[in-house]
Length: 84
Image (tube, rainbow, N blue to C red):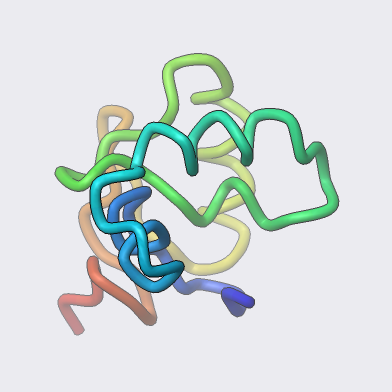
């Protein structure tokens, strides 16, 4: 499970699940999961947020100390986008 402030890509999740080419399937699964899974901590490989929930995702990430600019993660405390 991803902790607060940890941001990874859909492809990262797919790779850990043993299906490195299933990034889109991860996105579909997270879209249906509701609040049961920390969907807001998963973004596109270039840091872009989900277009469907960009405002909510941005607010949730910022509350965890993630720097978001123009709909893209630019820095995070933990994970793929950690620059600190």
